[in-house]
Image (tube, rainbow, N blue to C red; front, side, top):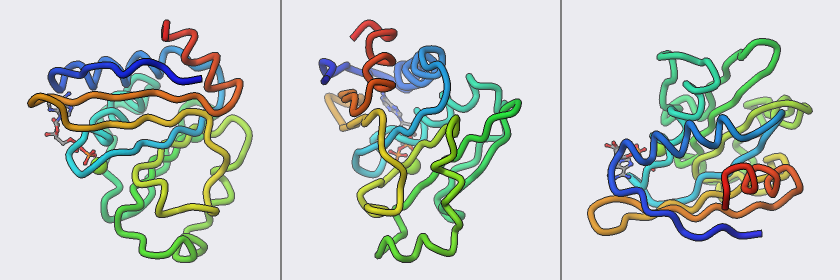
Length: 153
Ligand code: ADP
Ligand code: MG
């Protein structure tokens, strides 16, 4: 199931989408965030994690590759794999916990972690468009489809 492309004319629109997706999913979620540098992936992830209660402590995992957060009794992970040359480099990060049921996983540059990441529920494709951004959401599992339905896509 594929949603229509949404226009994100300014940063606030990207933040609103992050908050909307956070408000629309029931339990665990694995989401891949595609798009060039500056396309809005981290902006989306920050708004999403803040809406779930992470607060202002959301850092960009540009250098750490992965940031983990406790949200009540759940775990959330935000990955940025831009600096990964080979998915084998991910082994030492101990990513097994990403596949735990109920985990919330957001991955920037997921293609660089191919084979080392859990199955994806929702893929978001960000791009630059007319000075702002645009994004397309695609569901890959029933969880992803329910989320798109809740979003009204
Ligand atoms: P990425 O993680 O994809 O490299 P970022 O989320 O860091 O990109 O965003 C890069 C810049 O784009 C930030 O300054 C952010 O404020 C801005 N930005 C995010 N969404 C939009 C939008 N819809 N329109 C215009 N600028 C945006
Ligand atoms: Mg980023």
